[in-house]
Image (cartoon, rainbow, N blue to C red; front, side, top):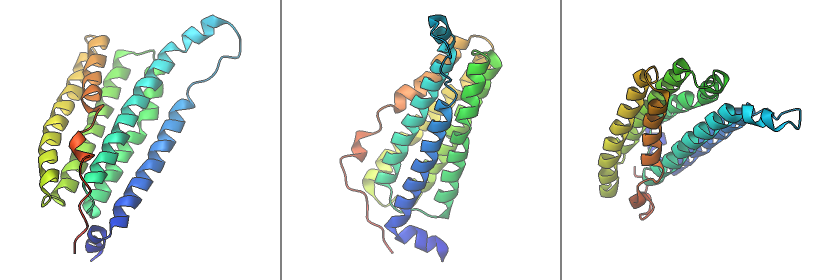
Length: 206
């Protein structure tokens, strides 16, 4: 009964988006708090902020890309259920660990173990988003454009997961190559599928 309510009320998708937006805003705020301003006018102190600023910029970009794609995902899929809610929470949980991973990378100045852990988190977050996308697409499979977008999204998600997984062992071989592997999914997802923006979201049905 409760699942039917989730499916039929469009407000539920709006509430899911609002909740996710709030959590993501907190995540970004926590990350920026790690950027401590120097207490002296010595320019050399600014250079020491390089690793911290770089890690923050990378994480901010990744979180922002997820936010944009999450927005597009909910725009093209209006019917949700309890499974979608829980997969969304799992995704947000993984995303909420980015401030910790970012601080670890900056604190160790990009040590291989820190990059490997960062890549593991990227893999977990990507997998959670993959499950979320599959779950919500199944509930809207009767909409033709949603089905077409879901197929291309699945392929892109699998490729992104492969690059994140590959970055874990590569972190102990070459940090720059591992970072390149982490950058590939970000580049691929920077611009979401434009077909999402060209159609109105499907109506909720009883």
